[in-house]
Image (cartoon, rainbow, N blue to C red; front, side, top):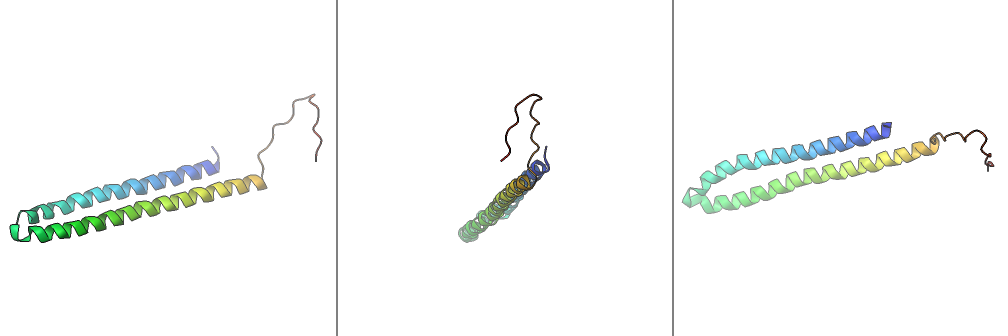
Length: 111
């Protein structure tokens, strides 16, 4: 495994951890917010306004956690491209060693 393969693996691991972490926090946030909204839904005079507040809350929640995951994927893709570019540049500077020709094989002319 090359150093660049290790960097690729680390990038993928961090991206997955941020994605899963954001999703886990979002689930807890949503479940925690559901409790007071359920209580407010049971009180007739404020049930309708509380539902409106919940719609706004849930829209903000979707936007924030969706943005976190979206930015995470954008950063991950950018890092993947950067690692690939570094890997290609490294190959240009230090090309991989070629296997020597078998003994007795005709020599290829050098350009």
